Length: 229
Image 1 (cartoon, helix red, strand yellow):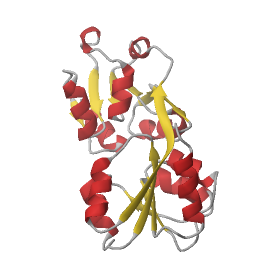
Image 2 (cartoon, rainbow, N blue to C red):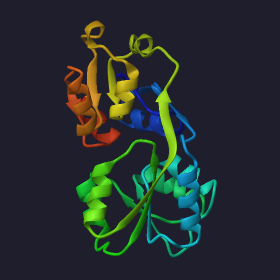
Image 3 (cartoon, rainbow, N blue to C red):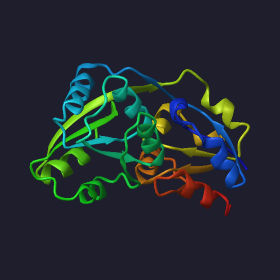
Image 4 (cartoon, rainbow, N blue to C red):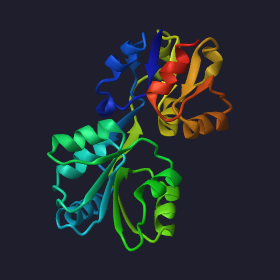
């Protein structure tokens, strides 16, 4: 099956190989483009705190976020680094640091994974998309949270529907990538629609588009479900 996937260009490493393992062909469509954050000061401040060991825990939610912070400074050895997903951990490793890997990015799971965080200072390098649920869950555990947008996402300059004419399915990898796609199902009635996770599915339903498949937050799960179609 030829499957379109709305993956950011900077985060698409290994996608083609992954799809081939499941017997599919990937067509990467970047409905978003990464740009510098609107205000670079918070990232500069977070990088300085990390380098001086003023953070207890540093969370990277993406490989691109890790790239952007490491371009500014290297975290002190005492800082506990936690990466969302193996690709993010791999990127951290490329800078000579080790990190723990967490696969489930739900706010509740994250707070539980970190353990006792009372009195801890936690830094988060993320996209310029607020996650108040995560911050709230960490603060309710007694932590002080320092967030910094490492990059922002903006709509990519390309026609999404034209590319879909070549595919049998599309996986939307985030709510934002779906929103920026401008997708309309009317003209694509036979296309199988997959949401990578429940938040993406929720964004699709709000626009009156019900996904045929909802994954668990991973491409692997979506590909496994698509293989049964």
